[in-house]
Image 1 (cartoon, helix red, strand yellow):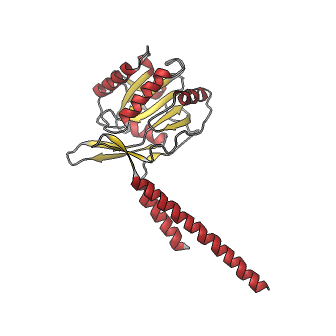
Image 2 (cartoon, helix red, strand yellow):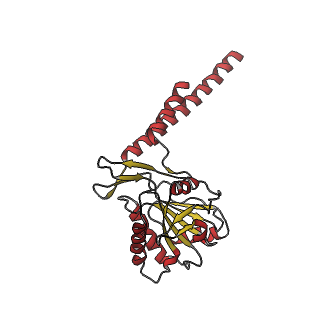
Image 3 (spheres, rainbow, N blue to C red):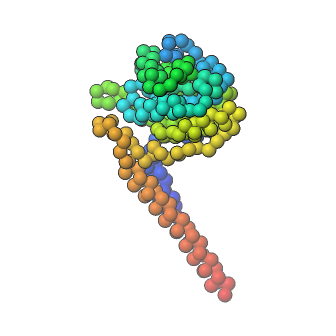
Length: 261
């Protein structure tokens, strides 16, 4: 039995490796005093930007070759269709996790996405921030968003990270996670309405990006077979462990019955 447990733990470590992904902290409160720099070069805090309104938070970086652009493009489309009034009913904050991102990159990224919204949109409702020191990581850790920095042979820095919208109440309480790249405007609307009263809601599309990976070379999404195979193997081992436990228990009961007779 001990060997089965050890094998199960080995498969867990093999399948998931280091801590990477979204580890939910629903109901916990994010510090609103962490300082950032916005796209205009102004030093500010999350609390000042939120201004007492429910807020959508995304963590990305501005030259990401992977899921950041598709995620932010979809968010812009969602905001275009959202049946709430920006800057009155909600705010949006995008925070860079890249310690090398600049104000110029944040400004250009904001411009690109605001222009893509095909209606009159209050640009003051969506801010693009960069962090000083370790501030972006402090925010990421506080909402359970874990990523990994990578450096290529040419010295280029990239980040492995998940994609999620994190919804905060006006007081900074985490009320909802919307995982993945594509979101429905109705889901976002309901999440913001719930956040306005501090209501914590269930997660939507929990495993969407677990099964897919971004192929930067091919510039497309591919099915991550190795993750699926690892997960299936893990489930099989776990099922085998349960089977042995149940059959062992049944055999013990039979032996006991024979002795009693």
